[in-house]
Image: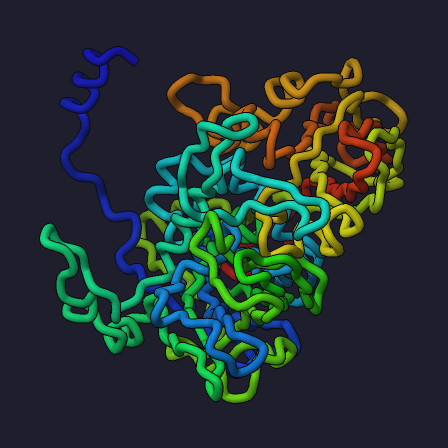
Length: 559
């Protein structure tokens, strides 16, 4: 459109538009757990929304999850001094709050709409990477805990911790190796959103000013449920050093469930969400300069949602040689008991106690309600997925693996490579608290790559080169306009990121005749692992497919 045409259209546009809705409210529902999450589960029964006689907008809903991030020494000592050293940025979270959810099931009127599938956060984080724009990151990134990790700041030491990307001093490296970045800007930015400390001094031209508390105190932060550092205790011979951050995590429902993201405005529908929660802990060994070992306890075996910063090139903690730190993430107000923090070292967080669902509720203007109900049966498609994992594959090997015997109406296949624990100093890469894996992949590439549907190649030829895989498959996936229009697109992954820690190998499998969509088709993966033979790699695969759904928006009945 030319500028002249736009000026004319703006001048001709009506100055007023009629009101579609006469009322909008947000309704909130607490989960059933009453603040206790030792079972690693939250159940949201939304019957009160069904009984409200209002049109509920589930695609605009969100979930708040109170979190408490804790770091202590394993015993009383004078090594860990978080108050003296201001160690607020010694720990943070991986990209996107949604990693605290290992899997989610959505029921609609007592029948399953979205199935319970493990490792959903890996799939959902990929969706965010390929759909969000930088404008989205600016406006909602701090709300949902999203800021992309620097793709080129990763490092690897086979004998100490394996993969890492936890140096949160965003500096440029001009002397070593490939002149990669040595600071993960994403980790630092996300920490800024949660590590507000009212006790610290502001900075003015002449030096230190008054404390932040003169404008916004800890009491104010508690009242407003703002994420902040609420406990810093220096260790002594009789006191355990402790650092704790209270976090109010916000997760958009459409980011964890495509069903909720596609569900139209509806009355009378009973929706139930069952969330299985990642609440891991890690014991870290220090040599007086750096973290040298980690032991992660993850009850559900999912992605570790938290990260610990490097001590030398990051703002991480420094303790004495051979001493240990315990780090944990708990849902609710308390650290998980499985973390085994020393007695009385951690306290309950001062923010919310329970997971809560928030949903917009609308009242139509009569003329628009009549128009909306002129066709009360609304039909839509939404995307669900199936997960299959190929474990402990040798670098350089050829992979020929059947992923499923049959899935109908497929849309795409995603392959995410992660270092196996045997090549990552004993810890699976996505369970590590020093790497970004889970929110990214490991920097592992595949070639001679293809997907077979019922024995037929999806790609005309096997893809051999990284630029083919990026430009012809990943670029434009999930993006506005499919990435075809310069200036109007979205997505966070470029080829440099793809060739480092965003090695998402994706293929569109939706292109078929309509009569074929209802026919289940087998899926087979062909690929070569392009990494040295001394490495072992796990491939986590996700097969996405469409489900059809029809609902009576006046009664909420499934049709």
